[in-house]
Figure (cartoon, rainbow, N blue to C red):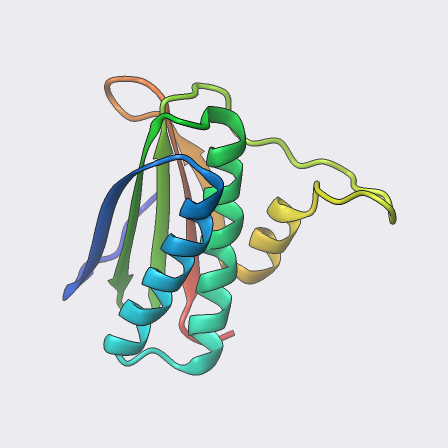
Length: 135
């Protein structure tokens, strides 16, 4: 994943326990920081939803473990990264009309200009999404 230069001072990093309440906490924290950084209302909404989906996936696979959430501004975009200790990457599923889950990565794919998984030194995985400031 080629990375563009970060915009100075617009970074957020938290290590938290993977628990259901973590999803809302990080979603709200991301929204507050984006507003502070001067992001548009549309970008705030898009990034908050991406954060929810990526953190929900980590919580589902490693509840009770430490996950690392990072969000930072790039020129024209916002990066969201969630690191957890599980090696297996997320898998897109075909959700049926009555299914309660299985649409998260489709949502991320629709809102992000790019997303993917990388393996950091030390194990686990980082799932990342780059959300453009304008669509």
